[in-house]
Length: 328
Image (cartoon, rainbow, N blue to C red; front, side, top):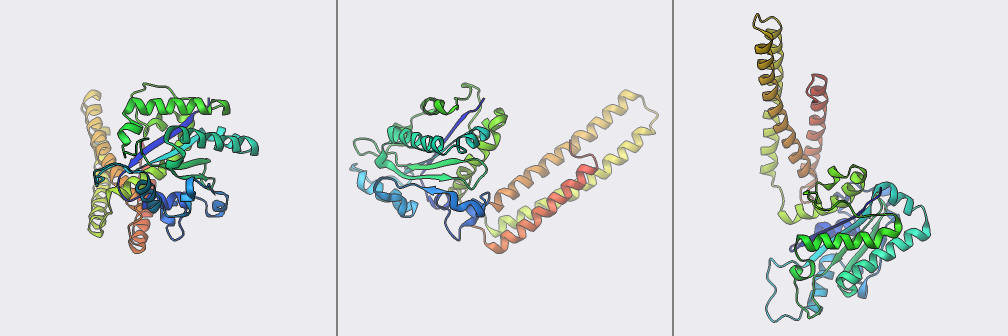
């Protein structure tokens, strides 16, 4: 089966990161590292209402709000100003759709119609097709303005149930392309749905990546001090892992020559394995944090170079550990 994939996020701060990603801004390649530069020319930046796609995203957002907002009170600093949308489907099905020029054209048009109906065409400030990543997908940015000119994401988007309804309506609009809605009430979030639906893992991974990048931009930058602390933590974890590796080997030797019964030996070995597993999991978490830092667009190129080299060292150590039996 092939699934329709629709992901939406709210934004209330700088849209620079997601804007650079969607627009493929020159000099901001760090915001779209997963894209293939040789295929960048295949992307299509569609004209939207009043051609707001021709100006930087943050300007387009402010322009639409200034024109459409009719409220008497000043807009709160923490108010949701825009929503980002990623629209795609299962990888193989999307490849099939885009192998047919007419079908891909209809898919794009129907996606635009869906957004225009749900949010109003005048509130769409970005509508872009990306073909330089693994799975074809659309990015859109909308402004949550009500019909009477209020800025209210709560009213436009609603609660979790409303979001489920959005996804149901989207799947219905995509049904003619052979894309269907995923299973409801699974108790899982959109972020881990790719684990549940293994057949759309690659499609959803590509689609959600830009949203993750945008959220990291909003949350703030990593300082040089935090980078150094992380490096120190990684070094300590790797040293500890080596020590635990050595300790485990010693325990194994003792257990093999122990006169104790089999049950006792198995218990000791299990304790040693559990301790080693805990340390390995802690090291993997540090490794994940480290990779997250590399993706942060605010880091200087010099620090990025240092981090990338460190990541290579970590990968090499992980391979060494696999050879020692730590890959479980």
